[in-house]
Amino acid sequence: MFHGVRLQPGDSARDLAAHGLKLKRKKGRGLILQPCPAHRGSHCAIYPHRPERCRVFECRQVKRVRAGESTEAAALDKIRGARTRVARVKALLHQAGERHDKRCLRARCESAMAQPSNLSVEDTHLRNDLESAAADLEAILAADFRIEAAPGRGGEPSETKAS
Picture (cartoon, rainbow, N blue to C red):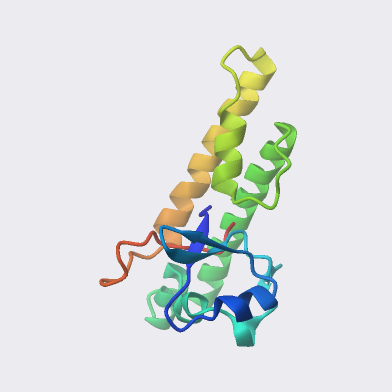
């Protein structure tokens, strides 16, 4: 649901681009555009060469399991629930004619919901369903996956791999 992952000082933009990652500069900082082309299914295709942010990132579920606050089975159940919600949003985007699947879900949802206000009843229902599904996905990501930005990270938004 997010647009990009900031490169860290030790990351080589050239090496990451050579491994197929799409990079962009924004406000003088390098970004890896999302969805990540190296994220295939449930794994990273460039794992030994992944950027620093990916090396150190642990979602809330991983942290809870490691701390003994949750079981692996419960975490996997949360992951399945999030994937179901992602699939629902993607299906509604497809119904709405938004087919830019190389863009992050948030941008795709914003584009689909920016349609004219004089929609048919059917299109209005579809837009409402999409808005509700996107809000539901955001809520589960915030509650069960995202972590707060670490101090000294410049207030970067939390990141997940659900894009």
